[in-house]
Image (cartoon, rainbow, N blue to C red; front, side, top):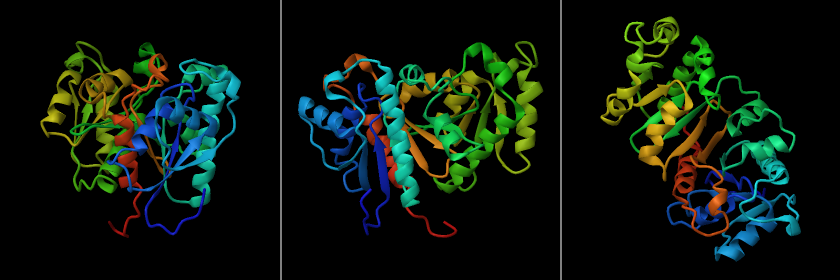
Length: 325
């Protein structure tokens, strides 16, 4: 990565699966006036794919491409899951981490990857960017936080089958999600005394055990333990009312128990502009809240709004902070 005396944050953007919409939304987002000038941007990916995307879709390349030469031109096509492309997308992440370590400061914004292609490339059990980045950096406590204009949601569990959720919700995982949410709301979102709502798991938050005992057995004890260091925690709150309460301003963030409990209401509201922030990493990492969208890749119709917001948030959070700020 070229050296620069600029005081702007350094933001690395990985293009994700080269056959998906990642390269397209990356170029479109970086061309947007909403992000122009906010940081020193560097695209991490195959220079061939970036140039091919720009040529085919009539886009411009405004920033340096940190080339990872791992896509064979004659084998490339849009919208096609392929183990070779899965491997390429992981290599872009690795390259971004290498560059970030050299700079010691900055942020990574990741375009969408395809988990099945990555698993087919030999990364068995690959769960996603979040777990991969945490594993590479040795981060033990981390979580996914989804951010929209009026709603922030942190997940206790992530990409697991619904049938496994109850046994994967543990006291320690809930405490970690609460603690990280509190830290990030204070440090990065400047909320002095955050109010955090904790969702129940079952209908009506179990209704005193009538519909399940996870609230009384696990969630409530976790709230009690977390309250020793985190104030203003509320719950367990019935899942069918907690998000509306957050939108009304009762909570600054919600801790949800599983993926779709959070993502269904979140994407209903912020499908085009939602952001995924990985909390707990030693650097800032954001991403759009959508996937590779192979069905529209290469057609020039992908909406860059979520990528724009992901880049904007990374730029804000990666700014150097004054001591005590």
